[in-house]
Length: 71
Image (cartoon, rainbow, N blue to C red; front, side, top):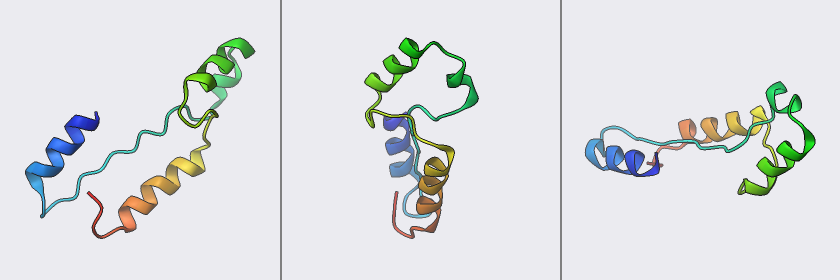
């Protein structure tokens, strides 16, 4: 995904900005239904070492939309 995003950004720049958001594990009811050991395994493998919430993901999108020069 990262390589695709960079390649596409190079192809369409400077007319179009291309970005991607890869939040990792987002806290949802699905994860609440998993056994604790499984959830802990996900957290250990996450770069943030925690689940992120939907608001944090939305904030990432908003910051990209508001930025004039991020690609």
